[in-house]
Image (cartoon, rainbow, N blue to C red):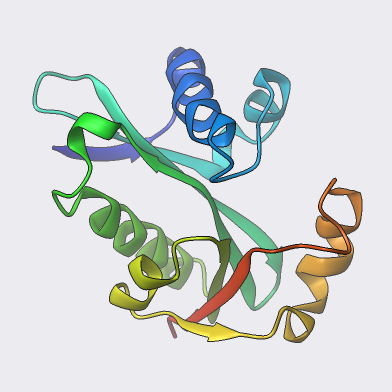
Length: 152
């Protein structure tokens, strides 16, 4: 298994993985255009055969806050600790950039708890709420859980 920066050749697989879970109501949809525009935020997990089996984004929201978003692992690889390794990788990346806190909006509270995150009120994340959430179809009735981890 290898985690690396996403490239344009990964877009179709990223799109399929993310939107497969979005169709189940587990995350927000992402368009190919959105993935292209934010490609530098994304990392992918490759199997030993070089197949992309996971994706996750680290989106900087403010000088001290970044968001892990669109985190998915292909269903056939779920439950093997790959998602946790990807969260750790993205958290280390935030630390390298000098970002103090990493957050996520999720339906997978237990998973993020196992990764060292704690539940917080969404209102404590004003940069996220006013930057991205205000344009979301779920705003202001978001049912996702906000989690936060200090990395510095």
